[in-house]
Image (cartoon, rainbow, N blue to C red; front, side, top):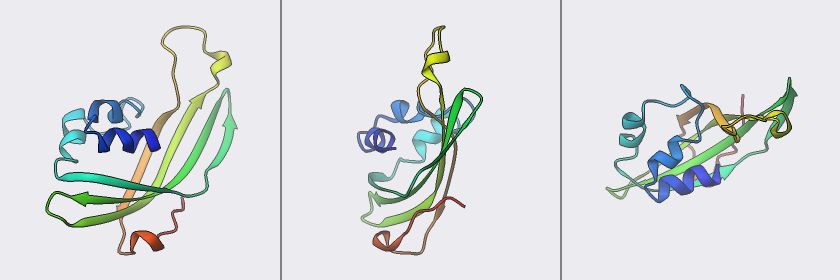
Length: 121
């Protein structure tokens, strides 16, 4: 998550978009334009919960973000990312598949960023 939002803060939208599994993010143009008024994003992480399944690990990671907009305003969002990692020991053919985001659900929050307690429902 830190690398994802680092990429967004650096305007490296293709790098950020590449962390998602195919079909898990909007089309690249829509993803990029969604950040057109964003100057900076701050990230807070909740406690991750992982479970194994048939050669992979699925992790639910709660997050809260605060976006700083080009007009000086800020917005707070909270929600959950689902991450998938295929066991590297069973990957023996190119291309290697690193940890990828399989789902992302963020919704606007009326709470102040400092009081958001990120959790996955």
